Image: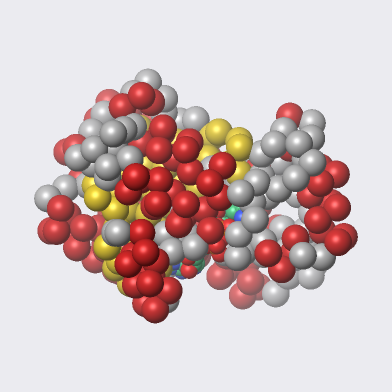
Length: 243
Ligand code: NAD
């Protein structure tokens, strides 16, 4: 199996895209630890998927450090860090309260940096890899998502920077930039006709994605098949950024 013998952490692994990735990693033979803020949701998902759960708020550096330490203590190392946990936001700059900016950036950007900083020493030992979940909004502007776009744009450039800095150490760093995916994050938006039509209209494939359409790329990027791929920000967007 593609990830046999590898240990992976998937933040936000109890729901949506992260859950599909954790599921696919378990199927590919990896030992998987999922990390979420909410214990009940995380424990239930870990039971369903056959993986471990460590309660973690990715916007708290000490908690991310403990997550990585607990994983390394249990499995003897770390091969793959998936920085997936995130929240959405839908405000323009003038609509946005300052605390929305701070909340979104602390989870969607600081959380990715914390996961990267705490995982890197172990990934340098294992010659492992990082998969960040960015967004098409990190590549192009969207509609009214100022804080989210700033954070995801940060993830895209951070991915390239860390890839360059640690290529000599054998660590590969890539991101996936999904278009709209049907998950608990987007469900309330996609249930409104106006927003669903906006997504349909902007997507040449005329539909949002399912989480299972994102997960195979996360398996590939973490596997030895991707041994020469680093610093890539890969859209999986039904053609959104091509048009
Ligand atoms: P989701 O809401 O289904 O899942 C997000 C997960 O992150 C949840 O498990 C949640 O508990 C966890 N989480 C949130 N804040 C956290 C925190 N502070 N600490 C730890 N865990 C936390 O959403 P999703 O759509 O699956 O999103 C997953 C990732 O994909 C996010 O980074 C999101 O920005 C990105 N993304 C989603 C879409 C989409 O259309 N759904 C598109 C592009 C990118």
